[in-house]
Image (cartoon, rainbow over all chains, first blue to last red; front, side, top):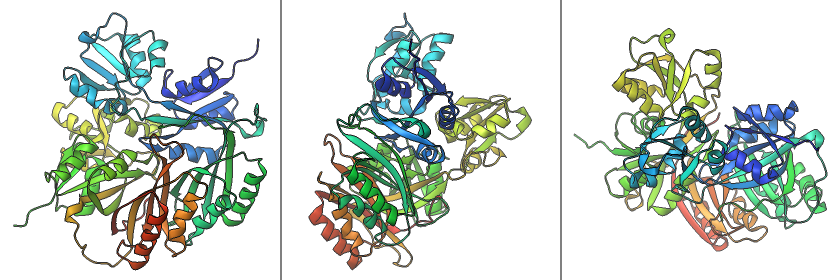
Amino acid sequence: MSKRPRVAFQGEPGAFSQAAVQQLFGDAAAILPCQRFVDVFAALMSKTADAAVIPIENTLHGSVHENYDHLLEYDVRITGETNVRIVHNLIAMPGVRFSDVRTVYSHPVALNQCLDFFEHNPKLEKAPFYDTAGSVKMLAEKKPAGAAAIASAIAASLYGARILRRSIEDDRRNFTRFFLLRRAAERRREAGRSGTWKTSLVFTTRNTPGALFRSISAFALRDLNLTRIESRPLRGKPWEYLFYVDLIGREDDSTVRNALNHLRELADFLRVLGSYPAGSQAAG
Amino acid sequence: MSKRPRVAFQGEPGAFSQAAVQQLFGDAAAILPCQRFVDVFAALMSKTADAAVIPIENTLHGSVHENYDHLLEYDVRITGETNVRIVHNLIAMPGVRFSDVRTVYSHPVALNQCLDFFEHNPKLEKAPFYDTAGSVKMLAEKKPAGAAAIASAIAASLYGARILRRSIEDDRRNFTRFFLLRRAAERRREAGRSGTWKTSLVFTTRNTPGALFRSISAFALRDLNLTRIESRPLRGKPWEYLFYVDLIGREDDSTVRNALNHLRELADFLRVLGSYPAGSQAAG
C-alpha cells in the first residue's frame, strides 16, 4: 500500500482550498486543515505535511500578498497550480426544506457574494459565521431549527448535509487560483515536459524611471510571454517595488534561463518561485 | 452657510472608509453610508452624493477588482487618493472593563488579523459579526454583558464606546488605499498644480509577446515613472489582459499627453481614470 500524500491547507475541512486539493490530487490525498496560512507553511517545512495548497489570487479580490510574503520567507517551490470556481450553495441538514429556512449562516464575504439571492428571498436572515465550511459543520453538530448555510458542495457532502439551492452567487466569474507547494530541498523532476508550463518569479528594481521597462526587456527581447505582472510597494523603501511575474516556459528552457540571467543583471533581487504545468485558465 | 459635500462610501458609519473620508475632507463632509460598492457609484451618478470614496487596494489583500470594474462602468473620475492604516482596537461600552470581557464581536477578517491578541488572552471568545463598525453599533444598541468589539477608533467615538486596547492587529503594515471620485461631467480644475500628482489608467493589449513591453515603452521612453502596474485576465478572452497603471504626472502635462497618445496607438483600449494629488505613501 503506497502512502497517501498529506496536503496542508488553510481553513476547515470542506473549505474551497480542499476543492483545490481535490482538483490537484483527486482522492489520493489525505488533508491537513490548518488555522492560518503561516501554519500551512510551517506544516510543510516541518514535514508534518508532504505538500501544501494555498490561494494566491482571486478574480474579484486580487492577490493574496500574505502568501507571496510566505513564499519568500520559506524554502518552498511551486510545483503546480489550479483554478477553482467559487460556487456558493445553500446547504441544510436532511429533512430541512427550503420553505423551513429562516437563518442562513456563512462567512460575511460569502453572504455578501449572494446579495441578489437574499433580495429575492427577503424572509431569509443572514447570520455571519466564522467560515463557510465551518457553518455547515455547525449545522451538523447543533442542528439549529430553520437554519441553512452557504458553502461549497464539498462541505455539504463532508458533513452529510444537502444542497437546497445550487450556485446562488451573484457573480459566476469568481475564481481563485491556488498554488501547490513542495519543500524546495525535495524538488523533483516532474512527470513530463508536455503541455504548457509556467514559471513564477519575484524581483525588485531600483527606483529609476524605466527600470521596470529594462527588466521586462529580458523577456520581451526573447519573445517570452508574460501571463501576469503586478507591482507591490516594498515595505519601508518608498518608491521601490517588488514585482510578481508569471511567464510561459520552464526554468530549465534555455531561453528562459538566458532571460533570467539577463534579469539578474538588472534586478536588485530575483527569486524563481517554481516552474509547473499551467492549470486551466480562470475567469474564462 | 456653505453646503457640506455629501460623500458616499460602503459600510456602516464608522467603517474604515469613513476614516478615509475624514482624511480627505476633515469634518467638512456629510457622510452617506451604502450597502454595496455598486450603491456607492449609483449614489454618485444620481447626484444623491457629491463625491464617493472607495477602497482600491490593500497591502495584505491586494486590489479590489470589483471597484476597478465599476470605475470602467460608471462615468466617474478619480480626483484624490488617501492611504488609511487599518488599526484594530478592542472597544466596549462605558463601564465595561477589560477583565469583564468574554466575547469579542467583529468581522471575521478583523478577528483573523488579531490572532496574537487572542492567543495572549485565551479567555476571550471570538464572535463573527457582519461588519467591524456594525459590531460597535450592536454593543451600543443591545449592550450584551461581557461583550466587546474590534473596530476603528472612529467607530468607538461615533457610538459612545471606549477603547480598551489600542492597535491589537498582528501586522501594522496593513494599509488600504482609497480613491476619491467625482462625476466625470463635473471635472473641475483642482486647487493647484504643486506637489506630486498621479494619473491612473486602464488599458488592454493584444495577445502578442512583447505587447506589454511596447505599451510601457510609451512611458519609459519619456522617463515617466510608473508607481503601479497590475495585469488582470480579461473575461472571456483567454490570454488577453487588462492593465492597471499609475504614473507620476498629470494628464495635461505635455509629456504625459504624448505618452498617452503613443499608448493609444499600441493598446486596444485605453481609459484615463483621473489625475490627482498623490497621497502619502502606504506601507512605509
